[in-house]
Length: 239
Length: 64
Length: 136
Image (cartoon, rainbow over all chains, first blue to last red; front, side, top):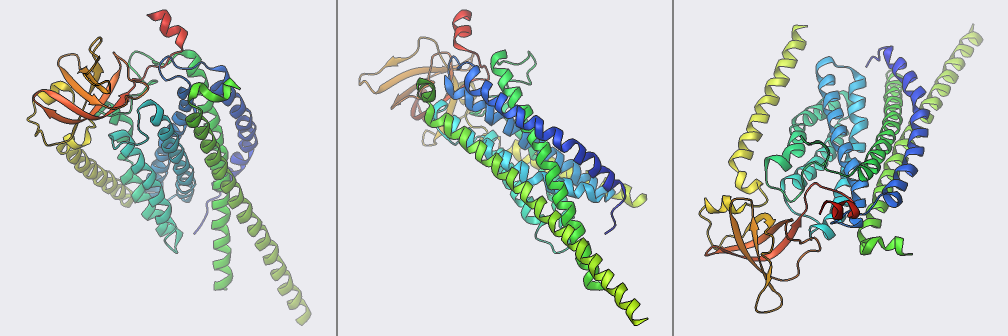
């Protein structure tokens, strides 16, 4: 496999912004957690359980955004054959799986006191569980092939087919009757969440996002180094 | 002390935060360790390869 | 170049085909995808009294009453048009309030819903207590 020279330019930029996002992430999490756990008020109905929202909702956003990145990168890889796109999709998958797991686990802890149950098979919860299995399936599939190019290609097809699940997750609460409530932020009449509770939510969202960028760059570097290693080993054995 | 009871919901709020932090830390450490290992291997390979090449060059000179 | 165009066309074609298939399946099995029926939807359906179903809506203001035994509770669930009486024996979730959402699971007998499980369904509004009392 041949790497174009813009690969090096990409990693120059990525390495330059890595420390910035490390600092932002290390700063945003304490601030976000302070507002989430101490500064923000309890909800008029849910009491302090509403604080679970500040770790649950950003994780759910991250889970869906990660999948969109993975699907876009997969399409790019299938159409333009750019190896960086394959690496982006491979790097995003474990991060997205972790975000999905956080959303599922914290959602269960939130549902027990508020709904009276930790799990139901409604459209939102079920489609998020499917998202988690799509991530796991993708990770297993891309690593199942000896040839990374074939693995990446098979994974990309799975990622694209699974992308149909993303709008289903987003709109499940509007299309069908679900136990899960609909979106508080993206509404026609503006957010239905008080500003002092919206602030910690957005702060935690920024914290999750900056951490996502840090992990993404780290994983891309690791995957790229792995590719170069493989190339060198193959060159050494064929000599 | 009253703060930590979370209005009676401590058993739900604290485990949520604990598990979220645990999973985030896990994936961060995983991302970092993979990168460190692969890059260390790559550097080792590079040094190794140049040693092999240097040795072959040196051998060629000896033979000559 | 034409090879790339072919790939793009194939990709979009396959995805559109799969998306249509998924949409058709979801529409065909809508009764299984929905978590609950509203009272109005129940009215227009012939539901077998043996079938365990869920009904959801808002608890009608002032409709909650204790039954002859203390554990039994009756309340009305409404979707704005139709309301349905629900009988339930058991512990209600913390967030059960009149005017708030609820989902009950059980059997429909002669226009009365005998529930064996009641879940609270909260809406997407979040606000602090002092603001909520100020609005009231």
